[in-house]
Image (cartoon, one colour):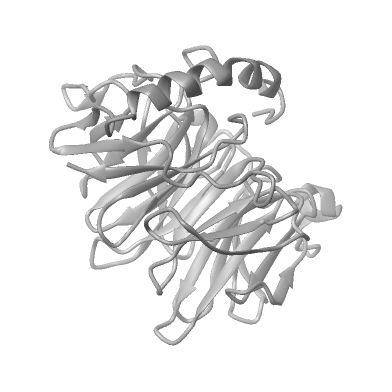
Amino acid sequence: MKRRAFVKNTIMSSTGLLLTKNLMSATGGPVYGQNGMTYQLNTNWGTLNAAKTPVNDCHEMIQDSKGRILLLTNETKNNLIIYNKSGSLMDSWGTQFPGAHGLTVQQNGKEDFLFITDTDKHQVYKTTLDGKILLTIDAPADLPAYQKKEAFVPTETAVLANGEFYIADGYGAQHILHYDEKGKLKNAFGGRGAGDEYLDNAHGICVDTRNATPTLIITDRTRNAFKRFSMDGKLIEVIHLPGACMCRPVIKGDYLYAAVLRSPNLDTVNSGFVTILDKNNKVVSNLGGAAPVYNNGVLQPMSQTEKIFIHPHDVCVDDEGSIYVAQWASGKVYPYKFTRV
């Protein structure tokens, strides 16, 4: 997908949409979602003084072990914005990540670390919570696909408690790269290709611990699917989500949550929603989207039905079950919050 192709039309259309959403949310807003996974929207939750703490694209969000909500933006006045759960600013830092894209937290029970991907600088960084860089990962030049650093355009990471991590090269050569805790490459799989074991726009990755044996769930966005792999890179399952160009998968409890950037069968501008899958990887709810329909066990194409989003790019599910949504190319909109009802 060409990320810049429809920014102009988005910005031109955003003003009217934002006005409508603010009016709708004046009294808390309507309820969104289906099948018991329903939420009330607050579009003003994370709004800050743009002159002091601006955002550009709001790419990803996580909750740290202190309960704070962290937002990553490619605005180099403050790449990392730290909120409390009420949406008030606690801190901000970061001027060195012009292509800030992926944000993952490593929690080992003692201290938290962040993993940040930068698509402009073609690097991945491990940092402390206050931004000190501890490790930098460049293109794995030992692999044929990465003889030029520009071939490495990492979009996401998944981190294990022991410090090992996976990088999804979602805008580059489409490989999934497995590293030890010191940054030594252990394995690579995926890459471009026509078979199910290959990937196209491997935008996101997470570790799924909902079953006894941990596995990886990886986005295959162009093909409208999540793919489950073993931890050593063997394909296990394809989860088809027709009508949904998803960003990264996020696991919380028994559910998988994902921002759907857009619906490929609709106008590329303003067609996104948030989708929620159960433990059996069946869609149970779409926030801003049509109720999921299965015919003979096959999910029918999904699409946006309510224009509450402009290119949702990530979700963060906090310890109370609330959902925070970051949006890309959205007229510099701050994150939204959905509270379970």
